[in-house]
Length: 290
Ligand SMILES: [Fe+2]
Image (cartoon, rainbow, N blue to C red):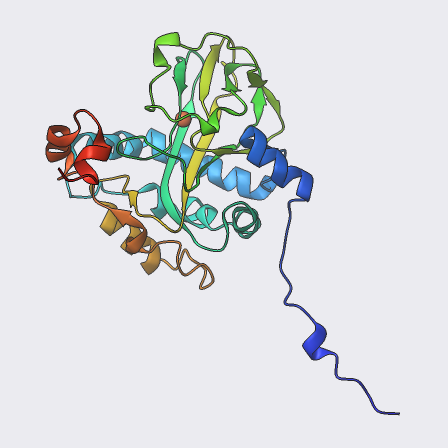
C-alpha cells in the first residue's frame, strides 16, 4: 500500500489566542480585558524596573526631553529597561495584535509610571495619533498593563464603549473632566498582571479614587500602529529610539516590521506650516483646484 505524503496538507502553526467572540467584541466595543495576562515572575521584575525608573528620576528626565522636543535622547529610555523592552514584543501579545491588526504593525511608544495614593484624575480623552483628526481608516492600539491589578483605590479606568469611531481631537471631551457618561464602563477590579487592550481612539479616563497608601499602582502602557499608512512619530528622538530597539533585538528576529522607520513621519518640523494651511475646508486645499 502506497503511503500518502500529508505534508502538503498541513497548515503552518498559527497561535490565535482570541476567539471569534472576543475579536468581534473588540471591533464593536473597542476594548478587551485580559485578566492575569502577565506571569507573576514577569510582573515582579517589571515592578522592580518601574521602581528604578521612577526613583532614579529617569522618568522625570525622559519627560523633560519630550517636552523640550530635543533630538537628544534622555540618559535612558523605557525600552532600555530590560524586561520593559522585551514586553513590547511579548509573544502572547504579538499573537493577539496580529489577530486584531493583521501581520504588519509598528511599535509607537512605551510609557511606565507608578501612581501613588492621591494621584489626580486624567480627563476624558483618546490617544489616536493623527494630524488633523479626520478618519479612522487604520487602527492604533494601546495596551495598558496593570502590574498590581486594579482594586478600587488610586484610580479607576473608565471607558466609553463604541466611542472609538468618533472622530474628534484628543482632548475634545476634556471639558467634561471625568464625569460619568451614559454607557461608560468602569474597570476597577483586576488581578495582578492584568492587561487591557483598547483601540487608541476609544474615549477613556482615569477617575481618581481614595486609598492605596499601602499599594501604589504600577502602570505600563505600550502602543502599536497598524501598517498601511504613516503615523506621526511619538518623540523628537524617535529614530534613535527605533534604532536602539532594533539593536537590542527586541523584534526577537520574528517581528521584522515592528521597529521600522517607514511606518512613521516626523511631525515636529511641519507643525507651524500646517497651522497656516489648516483653515476652512482641507478638501479644497488638498484636492480641488480652481
Ligand atoms: Fe490615555
